[in-house]
Length: 296
Ligand SMILES: *Cc1c(COP(=O)(O)O)cnc(C)c1O
Figure 1: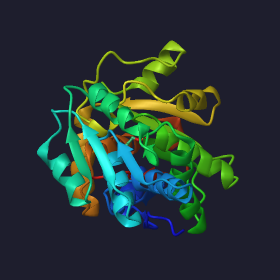
Figure 2: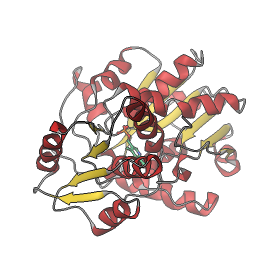
Figure 3: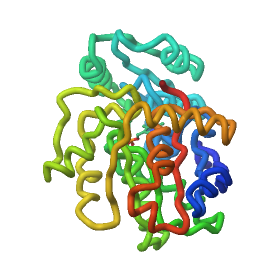
Protein backbone atom coordinates (compact mmCIF):
# COMPACT_ATOMS: atom_id res chain seq x y z
CA UNK A 1 0.00 0.00 0.00
CA UNK A 2 1.18 3.53 -0.80
CA UNK A 3 2.39 5.61 2.18
CA UNK A 4 -0.07 8.23 3.40
CA UNK A 5 2.51 10.97 4.02
CA UNK A 6 4.10 13.07 1.29
CA UNK A 7 7.78 13.48 0.55
CA UNK A 8 8.56 16.95 1.93
CA UNK A 9 11.06 19.50 0.59
CA UNK A 10 14.60 19.60 1.96
CA UNK A 11 15.63 23.25 1.73
CA UNK A 12 18.92 24.90 2.46
CA UNK A 13 18.19 27.94 4.62
CA UNK A 14 20.27 30.79 3.26
CA UNK A 15 19.38 33.20 6.09
CA UNK A 16 20.23 30.66 8.82
CA UNK A 17 23.32 29.32 7.03
CA UNK A 18 24.63 32.83 6.70
CA UNK A 19 23.88 33.74 10.32
CA UNK A 20 25.65 30.62 11.64
CA UNK A 21 28.38 30.45 9.02
CA UNK A 22 27.60 26.76 8.44
CA UNK A 23 25.07 24.89 6.30
CA UNK A 24 21.62 24.77 7.84
CA UNK A 25 19.06 22.54 6.14
CA UNK A 26 15.32 22.45 6.77
CA UNK A 27 13.18 19.31 6.50
CA UNK A 28 9.80 20.92 5.85
CA UNK A 29 7.46 18.50 7.55
CA UNK A 30 5.06 21.26 8.51
CA UNK A 31 3.92 20.82 4.89
CA UNK A 32 2.46 17.35 5.50
CA UNK A 33 -1.25 17.59 4.60
CA UNK A 34 -2.52 17.52 8.22
CA UNK A 35 0.22 19.98 9.22
CA UNK A 36 2.93 17.96 10.96
CA UNK A 37 5.42 15.07 10.77
CA UNK A 38 2.93 13.02 12.85
CA UNK A 39 1.43 11.98 9.51
CA UNK A 40 4.45 9.78 8.91
CA UNK A 41 4.12 7.66 12.04
CA UNK A 42 0.34 7.59 12.24
CA UNK A 43 0.07 6.91 8.50
CA UNK A 44 2.58 4.06 8.67
CA UNK A 45 0.78 2.46 11.59
CA UNK A 46 -2.62 2.99 9.94
CA UNK A 47 -1.59 1.19 6.76
CA UNK A 48 -0.11 -1.72 8.75
CA UNK A 49 -3.21 -2.06 10.91
CA UNK A 50 -5.57 -2.05 7.92
CA UNK A 51 -3.50 -4.80 6.34
CA UNK A 52 -4.03 -6.75 9.59
CA UNK A 53 -7.82 -6.15 9.41
CA UNK A 54 -8.45 -2.96 11.43
CA UNK A 55 -11.93 -1.49 10.94
CA UNK A 56 -11.85 1.47 13.32
CA UNK A 57 -9.19 3.90 14.52
CA UNK A 58 -9.25 5.44 18.00
CA UNK A 59 -7.22 8.40 19.23
CA UNK A 60 -7.27 10.54 22.36
CA UNK A 61 -5.24 13.43 20.95
CA UNK A 62 -6.83 16.77 20.18
CA UNK A 63 -3.52 17.84 18.66
CA UNK A 64 -1.41 16.89 15.67
CA UNK A 65 -1.47 13.14 16.40
CA UNK A 66 -5.28 13.10 16.35
CA UNK A 67 -5.33 15.11 13.12
CA UNK A 68 -2.93 12.67 11.50
CA UNK A 69 -5.04 9.67 12.55
CA UNK A 70 -8.18 11.42 11.25
CA UNK A 71 -6.48 12.14 7.93
CA UNK A 72 -5.21 8.55 7.70
CA UNK A 73 -8.71 7.20 8.31
CA UNK A 74 -10.14 9.52 5.67
CA UNK A 75 -7.66 8.29 3.08
CA UNK A 76 -8.16 4.62 3.94
CA UNK A 77 -11.95 4.75 4.35
CA UNK A 78 -11.73 3.72 8.01
CA UNK A 79 -13.95 5.47 10.59
CA UNK A 80 -12.03 7.42 13.24
CA UNK A 81 -13.17 8.46 16.71
CA UNK A 82 -11.14 10.97 18.69
CA UNK A 83 -11.82 11.41 22.42
CA UNK A 84 -10.89 14.85 23.70
CA UNK A 85 -11.42 16.57 27.07
CA UNK A 86 -13.86 19.45 27.58
CA UNK A 87 -11.10 22.09 27.56
CA UNK A 88 -10.22 21.32 23.92
CA UNK A 89 -10.42 24.41 21.70
CA UNK A 90 -12.99 24.79 18.92
CA UNK A 91 -10.21 25.08 16.34
CA UNK A 92 -8.88 21.63 17.23
CA UNK A 93 -12.34 20.04 17.13
CA UNK A 94 -13.17 21.70 13.79
CA UNK A 95 -9.87 20.45 12.36
CA UNK A 96 -10.67 16.86 13.33
CA UNK A 97 -14.20 17.17 11.95
CA UNK A 98 -12.82 18.54 8.67
CA UNK A 99 -11.12 15.18 8.10
CA UNK A 100 -14.36 13.38 8.90
CA UNK A 101 -13.47 12.13 12.39
CA UNK A 102 -16.15 11.64 15.02
CA UNK A 103 -15.14 13.80 17.98
CA UNK A 104 -16.31 12.75 21.44
CA UNK A 105 -15.87 15.49 24.04
CA UNK A 106 -15.64 13.84 27.45
CA UNK A 107 -13.94 14.40 30.82
CA UNK A 108 -12.24 17.35 32.39
CA UNK A 109 -8.70 16.22 31.66
CA UNK A 110 -6.89 14.31 28.99
CA UNK A 111 -6.57 11.26 31.29
CA UNK A 112 -10.37 10.95 31.46
CA UNK A 113 -10.79 11.27 27.69
CA UNK A 114 -8.02 8.73 27.27
CA UNK A 115 -9.72 6.29 29.66
CA UNK A 116 -12.97 6.60 27.70
CA UNK A 117 -11.07 5.94 24.47
CA UNK A 118 -9.65 2.71 25.92
CA UNK A 119 -13.21 1.44 26.56
CA UNK A 120 -13.86 1.57 22.78
CA UNK A 121 -11.18 -1.03 22.24
CA UNK A 122 -13.49 -3.88 23.23
CA UNK A 123 -15.03 -3.62 19.76
CA UNK A 124 -13.55 -6.02 17.21
CA UNK A 125 -11.25 -4.33 14.72
CA UNK A 126 -10.74 -1.19 16.81
CA UNK A 127 -7.14 0.04 17.09
CA UNK A 128 -5.74 2.70 19.44
CA UNK A 129 -3.01 5.06 18.21
CA UNK A 130 -0.57 6.15 20.90
CA UNK A 131 0.83 9.59 20.01
CA UNK A 132 4.49 8.70 20.62
CA UNK A 133 5.22 5.41 22.40
CA UNK A 134 4.92 2.88 19.57
CA UNK A 135 7.58 1.20 17.41
CA UNK A 136 5.43 1.44 14.29
CA UNK A 137 5.08 5.18 14.82
CA UNK A 138 8.87 5.51 15.11
CA UNK A 139 9.34 3.45 11.94
CA UNK A 140 7.03 5.85 10.12
CA UNK A 141 8.79 8.95 11.44
CA UNK A 142 12.10 7.43 10.31
CA UNK A 143 11.04 7.91 6.67
CA UNK A 144 12.00 11.60 7.00
CA UNK A 145 15.64 10.53 7.37
CA UNK A 146 15.29 8.11 4.42
CA UNK A 147 14.22 11.10 2.30
CA UNK A 148 17.09 13.30 3.49
CA UNK A 149 19.57 10.57 2.55
CA UNK A 150 17.82 10.05 -0.80
CA UNK A 151 18.27 13.78 -1.44
CA UNK A 152 22.00 13.39 -0.90
CA UNK A 153 22.49 15.10 2.48
CA UNK A 154 24.53 13.61 5.33
CA UNK A 155 24.01 15.97 8.28
CA UNK A 156 26.49 16.13 11.16
CA UNK A 157 23.67 17.06 13.51
CA UNK A 158 19.88 16.72 13.44
CA UNK A 159 17.96 19.18 15.63
CA UNK A 160 14.40 18.27 16.64
CA UNK A 161 11.90 19.17 19.32
CA UNK A 162 10.74 16.65 21.92
CA UNK A 163 7.34 16.11 23.50
CA UNK A 164 6.92 12.43 24.37
CA UNK A 165 9.95 11.46 22.32
CA UNK A 166 8.39 9.70 19.34
CA UNK A 167 10.02 12.04 16.85
CA UNK A 168 13.40 11.60 18.52
CA UNK A 169 13.11 7.78 18.43
CA UNK A 170 12.07 7.90 14.78
CA UNK A 171 15.05 10.06 13.85
CA UNK A 172 17.42 7.71 15.67
CA UNK A 173 15.88 4.69 13.90
CA UNK A 174 16.18 6.53 10.58
CA UNK A 175 19.84 7.38 11.14
CA UNK A 176 20.54 3.79 12.17
CA UNK A 177 18.84 2.20 9.20
CA UNK A 178 20.68 4.51 6.81
CA UNK A 179 24.05 3.79 8.40
CA UNK A 180 24.58 7.39 9.59
CA UNK A 181 26.56 6.42 12.68
CA UNK A 182 28.39 9.74 13.04
CA UNK A 183 25.30 11.96 12.97
CA UNK A 184 24.35 13.41 16.35
CA UNK A 185 20.90 14.47 17.51
CA UNK A 186 20.11 17.55 19.57
CA UNK A 187 16.69 17.26 21.19
CA UNK A 188 15.08 20.54 22.26
CA UNK A 189 12.31 21.21 24.78
CA UNK A 190 10.71 24.37 26.09
CA UNK A 191 11.14 25.13 29.78
CA UNK A 192 8.02 23.87 31.53
CA UNK A 193 7.66 20.96 29.08
CA UNK A 194 11.17 19.67 29.67
CA UNK A 195 10.66 16.10 30.87
CA UNK A 196 13.63 14.75 28.90
CA UNK A 197 15.94 17.49 30.15
CA UNK A 198 14.85 16.96 33.76
CA UNK A 199 15.38 13.23 33.29
CA UNK A 200 18.93 13.88 32.13
CA UNK A 201 19.58 16.02 35.22
CA UNK A 202 18.15 13.49 37.65
CA UNK A 203 19.55 10.38 35.98
CA UNK A 204 16.15 8.66 35.73
CA UNK A 205 13.07 8.99 33.55
CA UNK A 206 11.05 11.51 35.56
CA UNK A 207 7.40 12.53 35.32
CA UNK A 208 6.77 16.29 35.46
CA UNK A 209 4.16 17.42 38.01
CA UNK A 210 2.59 19.75 35.40
CA UNK A 211 3.18 21.44 32.04
CA UNK A 212 3.78 25.18 32.28
CA UNK A 213 5.02 25.83 28.72
CA UNK A 214 2.61 27.13 26.08
CA UNK A 215 4.06 24.79 23.45
CA UNK A 216 1.03 22.50 23.32
CA UNK A 217 2.55 19.80 21.15
CA UNK A 218 5.44 19.33 23.61
CA UNK A 219 3.10 18.86 26.58
CA UNK A 220 3.96 15.28 27.59
CA UNK A 221 4.59 14.78 31.31
CA UNK A 222 7.04 11.95 30.65
CA UNK A 223 8.99 10.72 27.63
CA UNK A 224 8.75 7.14 26.45
CA UNK A 225 11.46 4.92 27.95
CA UNK A 226 13.20 4.47 24.62
CA UNK A 227 13.71 8.25 24.31
CA UNK A 228 15.20 8.39 27.80
CA UNK A 229 17.50 5.46 27.02
CA UNK A 230 18.78 7.29 23.93
CA UNK A 231 20.53 9.78 26.24
CA UNK A 232 22.89 7.07 27.48
CA UNK A 233 25.36 7.36 24.59
CA UNK A 234 27.18 10.44 23.30
CA UNK A 235 25.16 10.78 20.09
CA UNK A 236 22.08 12.36 21.67
CA UNK A 237 21.82 15.38 23.91
CA UNK A 238 18.97 17.58 25.11
CA UNK A 239 18.71 21.32 25.78
CA UNK A 240 15.90 23.76 26.57
CA UNK A 241 14.73 27.17 25.36
CA UNK A 242 12.11 29.49 26.82
CA UNK A 243 8.66 29.92 25.28
CA UNK A 244 9.68 33.49 24.39
CA UNK A 245 12.76 32.27 22.52
CA UNK A 246 10.65 29.70 20.68
CA UNK A 247 8.13 32.40 19.76
CA UNK A 248 10.88 34.69 18.46
CA UNK A 249 12.18 31.84 16.34
CA UNK A 250 8.67 31.30 14.89
CA UNK A 251 8.37 35.00 14.05
CA UNK A 252 11.78 35.05 12.45
CA UNK A 253 10.96 31.89 10.48
CA UNK A 254 7.88 33.52 8.93
CA UNK A 255 9.91 36.54 7.91
CA UNK A 256 12.83 34.59 6.51
CA UNK A 257 11.08 31.54 5.07
CA UNK A 258 7.45 32.61 4.59
CA UNK A 259 6.08 29.58 6.49
CA UNK A 260 4.21 29.77 9.77
CA UNK A 261 5.22 27.16 12.32
CA UNK A 262 3.98 26.44 15.83
CA UNK A 263 5.77 27.03 19.14
CA UNK A 264 6.83 23.38 19.43
CA UNK A 265 8.70 23.76 16.16
CA UNK A 266 10.06 27.16 17.16
CA UNK A 267 11.88 25.39 20.02
CA UNK A 268 14.15 23.49 17.62
CA UNK A 269 14.66 26.60 15.48
CA UNK A 270 15.53 28.67 18.57
CA UNK A 271 18.27 26.23 19.61
CA UNK A 272 19.80 26.54 16.14
CA UNK A 273 19.54 30.34 16.18
CA UNK A 274 21.32 30.41 19.57
CA UNK A 275 24.26 28.57 18.03
CA UNK A 276 25.63 27.56 21.44
CA UNK A 277 25.42 23.81 21.84
CA UNK A 278 28.59 21.96 20.68
CA UNK A 279 26.45 19.67 18.46
CA UNK A 280 25.72 22.83 16.47
CA UNK A 281 28.96 24.78 16.81
CA UNK A 282 31.02 21.68 15.83
CA UNK A 283 28.85 20.80 12.81
CA UNK A 284 29.43 21.69 9.17
CA UNK A 285 25.89 20.70 8.18
CA UNK A 286 22.93 21.02 10.55
CA UNK A 287 19.51 19.59 9.70
CA UNK A 288 16.50 21.08 11.50
CA UNK A 289 13.23 19.18 11.52
CA UNK A 290 10.56 21.81 10.81
CA UNK A 291 8.00 19.60 12.48
CA UNK A 292 4.65 21.38 12.34
CA UNK A 293 2.50 24.43 12.21
CA UNK A 294 -1.01 23.70 13.45
CA UNK A 295 -1.28 24.01 17.23
CA UNK A 296 -0.50 27.14 19.27
C1 LIG B 1 4.01 15.86 18.38
C2 LIG B 1 4.82 17.01 18.04
C3 LIG B 1 6.08 17.22 18.61
C4 LIG B 1 6.69 16.30 19.64
O1 LIG B 1 6.80 15.00 19.16
P1 LIG B 1 6.98 13.79 20.17
O2 LIG B 1 7.00 12.59 19.31
O3 LIG B 1 5.83 13.82 21.11
O4 LIG B 1 8.26 14.03 20.89
C5 LIG B 1 6.79 18.34 18.21
N1 LIG B 1 6.30 19.20 17.31
C6 LIG B 1 5.11 19.03 16.74
C7 LIG B 1 4.63 20.02 15.75
C8 LIG B 1 4.32 17.93 17.08
O5 LIG B 1 3.14 17.76 16.51
